[in-house]
Image (spheres, rainbow, N blue to C red):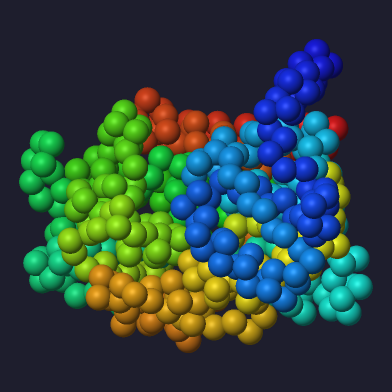
Length: 436
């Protein structure tokens, strides 16, 4: 373990000169405070600059400088940023793509606690944002760009099959019936009615339909993997793939499928994914030749609560920041007015209207999507916001076990009973080890 740590630190030292794009120190020629904002979202560069320009107009003594690492690959980005923080590289704002990834790093001490900055402002985290995520009782990042699950559907294919846009109370049984009706063709030209991506957490969609809070853990903080909502869903998913109405995981992995390409090229009809894809509908890179409609994630029973699993892109101030006060002030702007200026995500600002954010995202290409269906989902009067109230630092390890074990089941090399048994054994071992 000690040798591994020494090797890791050596790599960090070697990489530091190549990574030092901007130091975060004051610019010697302008006298401005430079906020170094490190991101992986290269396709957001133009929109990010709009937010920075609006802020700088109000704060002419500040210069926000974006630096992009990973080129749209958050995993590569996190690997690099982790090394940069460990090596003491000055940065002022960094990102994580979801709560588990954020929680693991916050727990390790990579980010500073923002509670004192809210106190100095005369507010609290909960005063300012709708959905609030804490780690060990502290605020180590702000989810400023919210993401919710929904089902994107090729409306032209839906119309051709004589199927209506699914109602808000549709069920997984309804989803199966739609998948069967929408699948057609054979061989390489086959179009699948359904698609689930290769991420292990796609197998938690059924849990999100059944409970609020964490989809990885029960209310008593024990692993969810022997719960019927999980067991029934992975069995359900495999049945769809075995029946030939949902893209087989074997193909997804063997062909390294990109779910955006699969959907926008019309090779799949229904795609359970996130609202982060809304802006893609108007992206010239994809230019779908069909109208996209939407449905909420199905429920097990039509009279179940309308749970909507929330996550977000988290923005944190690393412990290596040289201008934490300035970084915090910009973050408050970035995660409030900035979301509307950027126009790509749903705001988390207290009292913000979800559909107002969505309208800003889809402005300019409303002819390419079903605004009525999207409005019905976002304005659902029975909407129940569901976000993880328990996310331990070892959740990413459990996520790895989830992917490995469910892959073996879905690929036919392991039984359902063995999969559940292995998941419970591995998860409990991870939990026990963390307590030592």
